[in-house]
Length: 122
Image (cartoon, rainbow, N blue to C red; front, side):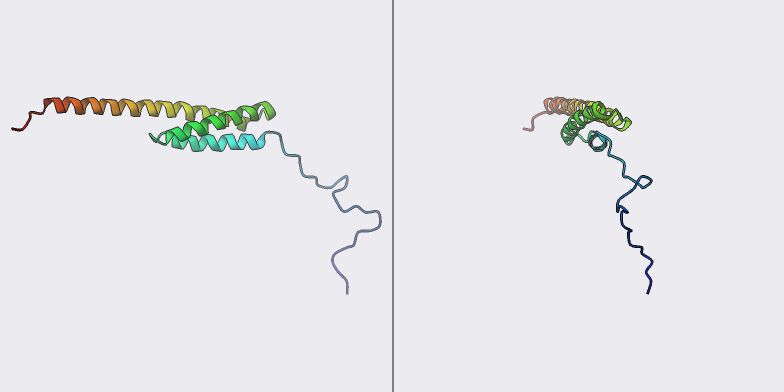
């Protein structure tokens, strides 16, 4: 009975040889870049929602720090894109918060004005 599997000969190495396949070493900062990109995307989606945009600012700050560290370590485009998305998250969150606060302020002043114009019932 013959098998299709050959046994290694004496002196033959098991791993990849000079012409064999070797797994490339992971690039430095790639995990930071991916994390920054994901936090930027999640934060960008949450930054438009009035109360939840506080969480988006936190995600944006963490992602921005990780993205800047990723830029210094690897200078990858993904780190730069993640940092830009996180910065946009922070900016949009503050704009959305200011708009929300302005709307609430206008609504309260209109309500007070309407209450002043109401005549008391005798």
